[in-house]
Image: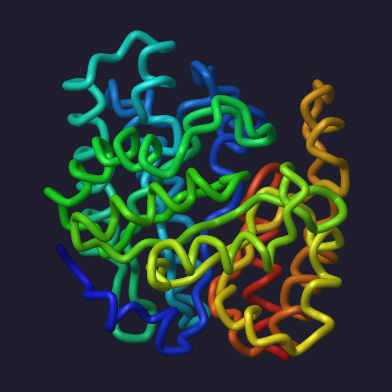
Length: 314
């Protein structure tokens, strides 16, 4: 393992950026075919590996330029049993790809990480079911058993933490947290929300965070929101409620469309990168506990660069 939980820069108030929406960028801008939207598929061949290396490198150079920390997620959002089975990968294949994804970022960190711009290696998990819809709902124990396979693999590697993205119900988040605790890994739980700022189940973000914290003895190192436009959750940060201090990261969508509308869209809504950067930095200005800012679906290098510019000149 690399950085300990106590050394994670985002927990020491160091501002971190992330990359943008990797999968949408690769599909729409690089015209790559990702089976089941799984970017880990690119690890199968040298050209795909080189594409991912260059993708990560661009953000590492950006973080260096602005002297910001960088949280890089592995390409393994879809590298779990159910999604791997759809693609035709065995458990052994998935273990190999999960480990290889960490080594790729290790190479980037060796070349670009430094004291001013440290790079955090985050092992990325996705939901068992659809990221937008709480399907295939599990109990917390079932979720722990299911996700512990991928988490156990990450525990063999040099990840600094793990992060579960686009979670949409409490039990799966709880199970992932319990599995992370079992293997001694710091974990970030990132929920997705609808246009009203609530989880797809109808739970408020406050309710979801309280439920996971209560079931895991405040297990997550911190929480995030991802895969929603800033206008969908900005109203949550207009108060000073203490539970908000548990939310340290935002990875916004470029589009203002709802999840249902995005599912029906055949084109990429890139939004307005300048406005996107301003919206996230504005939320940071009123919520100092936010230390991780980045992008999700529809965002790319341009959106993250605008975040950097706004943070630097704020």
